[in-house]
Length: 188
Image 1 (tube, rainbow, N blue to C red):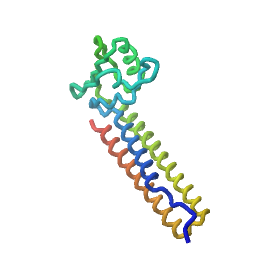
Image 2 (tube, rainbow, N blue to C red):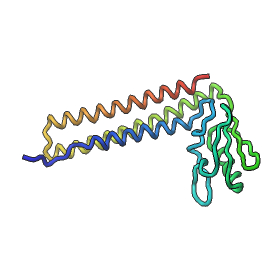
Image 3 (cartoon, rainbow, N blue to C red):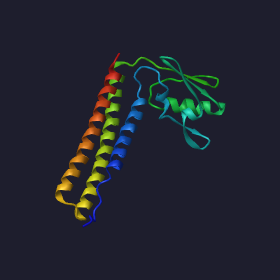
Image 4 (cartoon, one colour):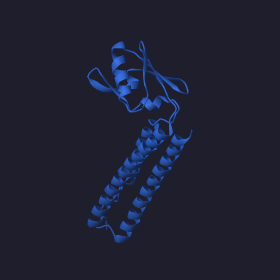
């Protein structure tokens, strides 16, 4: 006798949960920790040639010293747009324009700003948890369909536990990443 139901696609569920973790880690890279990092500029977009373009695609980003980022803009018509995008980015950095080079001195983080950044990190983590739970929900829908297509209850219980275990593992990774990032932000 052949089964008329499909097992849940665990590879797909794992891949999508891993994607939520990768997205979280990328968002964390954009949070300042008091040290200059080229990845801080990754989320900033500039209106270049009629479309929103990442800063690193209109110039060269360098970190010449621990508290300085430089951005060498290739097209001088883009300098003012890049400066505007940086000022409006919420990074709390004042760009200094020198021809086609924009210098971004990274100020020391004060206690209040550190607390704000830990809250932003917590928000990013919560969004990742929600994404992971949404993937779990998709897995549970696959399971419900398989059960209505004839999956035995024992198999359903096994798959249910496996999906839950995968979810718990990913949520723990989010929590660990958040704890690590908050600790990094609060270091003076």
